[in-house]
Image (cartoon, rainbow, N blue to C red; front, side):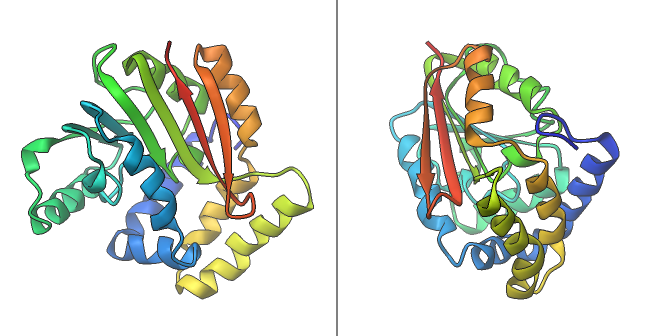
Length: 228
């Protein structure tokens, strides 16, 4: 794996790990972040207000999608199993299912027309994209002019601080969560790029008004950009 692309076999292993987390997906995330993940997601949720069409890439079991405030929400994920759980959760929450459209596809090939979305987001999923540069090109394509894209993810640092975050994910998070899943996530973190690295690629792709927002003592970041 490198900062732009995950090896195909590793990516398949990662997909299996994520699917294996499904029964306790939200609980694992909450334990890993000491319950702060809900606060960070609210920033994306608020951004979706007054947006007609939103697209969440790597929507998983619908944790964020079912809270987005847009009129129509496209949930894009490579796993049918994730979509099935998301649909069940949406029904249980008594949210109109017709508000959502589930699309089984990777971030690198999104079967959505050009210039469709007012808002695109991904929460703790960008790090796991198979080909991040290709995915950014796809996201730019489906955004309308003046549309906004936001990434929420773990911040990579190429220094001792990054090593501390890596060790937390690999050694401490499994104990806190009672799951071995974070060990695979530590692997993707190790090969992840810094927020600035991806901000520069976004600029090359055509995005403008690119901003990096550090959160939680710079262990988390939000990277936002617009298509103008």
